[in-house]
Length: 530
Image (tube, rainbow, N blue to C red; front, side, top):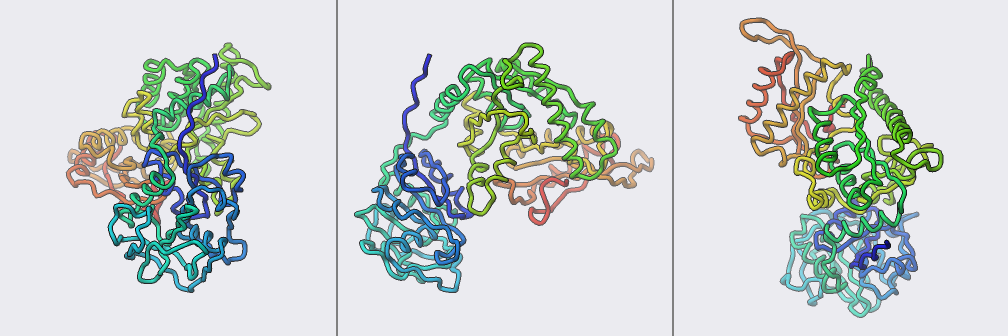
């Protein structure tokens, strides 16, 4: 039976000119419960018409409009009758293409400023006469296009905010999307609600229904396979696909022997017993440890684990085909491979600063799955940011221990053991890591930080235990806070908590007599030690 198509919802398109804040703009709009979508700067006016947005935001960018090869907009976009808000470089594009004048001042204005509102623009409804704003620009508008008037000025610019009310065109020389513009969200709210007339119809409930509809349309009656890692993204994808297509989904959970303590039990309990998902559990720990024997170099470790994962995954699919779990399509057992690609991956792949083909290959080959496997991809959460994925997980009934768990590296504990990975060293690290997690949870710190974990160092030190001299291993604690993993800082957790973790590891984990605390930020360090 055909399911009814989901209703069309409000939409704001964001044209990406390479700003470091493009993702922030998209997130701010979604926080208003309005769907936002990032598209390349060179999207045509006719393509935009097909997408049927309620309005358009032009992002900032690092270029000057006069630079050779600077990204340029299709000027026809300004004639579509859609509201447009240009931010920084977006404003310069608007002025440049509509007959105004833009000059490169030779000085970059960066930092806090005061905006004086001059003509009661709809953008600033309810915001008073002056606002703290954040500047980051090099070009400056010196002559407005015909039909435009100034809506706000700063000490350094008479045209810090401009508008053409007749054509619904607006421009800001500052960044309303960043936290340093305290009331910037209200400016975006005025644009999205009052100027673009968007409805608050982007909710995770509506997303789930739409995603299920899309998946059913894409896969029909075919089978889908998902490599389930137990992480947030793959777990939410598993729950979402199970809701959409039921037993057409088979999840493969590979135990590579490098998992956290009881990881395989948790995943099998949550998805096998609670959700009744078809789950194939593959214990390949011996295979991985054999391949890692004698390997010390961290990059070699990653390569060995990645290559072995491909072989194990292929073997698992072959075994499922033999037992009749799936139909034979195009020479292998499953036609569709599901992946947990997220929206930041998609945005990065269209960014003008990167190489889209390279980025797409990285993101779309989970675990390095080779192209020769000829899967068609199912990516049901590719529209979502991480916090939205967590909201979907909660709505689908996933437990908090899955939805809010901390990120875990693909190669597992192998990159938290400096030096060779052996069963003995894995046992030491697992015990230490379990203590770290349990103490962080008991102190109500686990969900407040980005990551907290133990690292086993290839260093033995002298110690004293029960009047006996010892020569044992060293554990390093790594506890960091971050928004996205790109930058991070070490967390100033209470000394009492550090003392409990250190005492328990030294007393309970055989083979450890010293615990150290890593106080490095990223950069210059990385979060993981390898």
